[in-house]
Length: 328
Image (cartoon, rainbow, N blue to C red):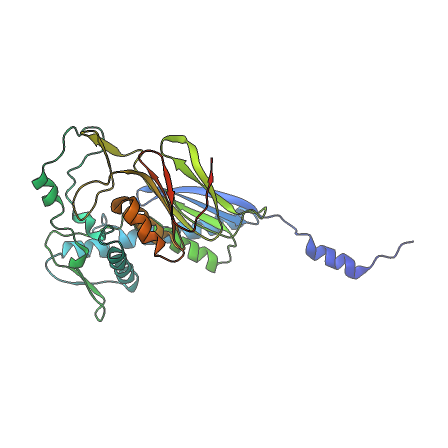
């Protein structure tokens, strides 16, 4: 008769997991865009609890920053442009403050007051001629981040020009992804992805131990990837004009418009930015598009923990200093 070592049995019991973790996903529509929440969890019930938590946080952020909801703090700021300052929550005040700092870093290529811009460019195929110079100049007359006045003491926001507006279309989804990730981490979710219509924030690893990977779409052939890169704990955002653009006088104009001039960006097909947070990556991806290849890469190379991939209108790939890609 063989006598078993009971301590060995106990040790083996603790080494062998009762359940293997799995990946669970759900798609929802928020902020006018599709969100895909992916979590690594022990079972579907646990995953549902986590995903519900993430969706409730994204919904909360949407209500905070929405310019469509007349009762939101953002709408109140816009309604009182040129009239009076508006006291806001600490969260919104800090988001606007960071946005203004990003405007400074990008020389105004990123600007949340872009919402004041008159929409004279159409990217639905109906536009056949260029707007005239006067129309273009007039379209950005009320845009300018320096006219967003913050009062730290009173935690208030004042837009100096009447008719001026702020909007978070170029930063809001990224911020929502960051906040949802942060909440899930606080609640013990060890790994996952918040994909806010292409604005992705990841943490941890897949259940098999592999890193998450992200494919960079080839803008000249959307059915193929230009590169595949691993991403373990950070954000990646791609801005592209391969779906929304207009070609006038032989020039391809992106749907991303320079808030300083009123002219659409040219010369670039896509920009992918890697950063610690999706909010930052979101803002910089748009900014690099506007600043152009040389200035954009130069600015990215000055920022710690931020990398960039640019594909120009000829399909040529350019990268920041500290990034290596597997080209397909």
